[in-house]
Length: 382
Length: 173
Image (cartoon, rainbow over all chains, first blue to last red; front, top):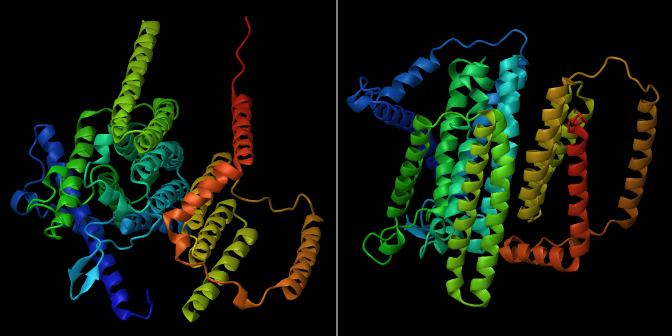
């Protein structure tokens, strides 16, 4: 790779701009999507005045937020108060840099272009490291506001994110074991025969639960529990600075859905039984981004659906669930996956199917134990 | 090569500036944040040296996990601001003296032992592949299995100790 090759720089620039604009547009229409879907579930109509179907609503919101007055609390730490939204925003965008949204060698403009901003060999680790520094913006926003509620929100979120990161890391490990690679492009290619969500369904489920906690979404939105903390870490923010937090949260939702799709649901690949047909990505490269978009839309719908139907769980139960239930289960899942892969390599390829069976039993056992524990507590209270 | 050198110079300046900022800042939160920046800069150094695994591990563990806990503790204790007066007045002079000794020592070793620049060959493509990670794992779990396990048990003991210390004593009937 020659760094003096100016076309390479141009390619990187174009791809980065494409991802950034895709995320910004995605954010704007995710707010619309969420409000419409929530309204449907609650038997309302939702925003439908600005433009057809309310499609211009995000633009109206943006104009409103830009012209709102910005307030900075007198006792706030002005430097960090300014930087906290920026520090929150940046990881949510650069997280998308390694996610492939199409094939590796697309013939475009007379050259082969890999449809990912950066196709690096430690892609999964990159996701892990960026996800782990995403917590800074929220903590600093809480601290710099010099407000007790904001501070508590910030501390809650950092404790929550650190706790759930452990299970997140173990789920990354599970996919690394299954794909035998840390390269996201390779992980996607490995799933062209079968999704990892089919081989490791419990792992995929844990991943989805943990990502809800990582992006502070309901039912894990403790950092901004309105009844307890007014609005949590962004209580003191208004105008564009508040909008940045808002954007970061929704962009993280999109990116984390992209990651979930990439790691467990075949990424930009078609459904496995469509291989070799006219709907295959190998046939038309432009189907890749479309498939990824469809998967992301479905996963986002699940996030919205959960927000509409589930109550927020209590903070001590949230931590207990993370440490006492999800972490041991994730450890067991990682172990079962490793053992299954080893058996299928050494003895018989059919042993790969011991993974879903055994991990299904482990998952079921966990659910039964939680149920019995809750029953026991209810009995003791009565 | 020259591009690498330019990157190196810029990064070294950032690393030194953030390290100084960490030392000189009067606010513990800012000190911690300067240290985070320093860790990230060092991670970029590792990337320049062709060791992406170590770079990512550096960011995840130091910048992502340990420093967040530091910030957490500083905020919970409300220990952001240093007291105006030093509790150990002689500490400053002792630190200055030791730093001078270290600087002289480092310069001496650098001048006498440093290899010619040509000998430090840039790592080849192999470092960037998964095979390298596999080798690392092999060495860690075969050759250094005992030290690895002992370290993990040590960490486990420390964790159990912390939990025992914060646990509320149950009243004996």
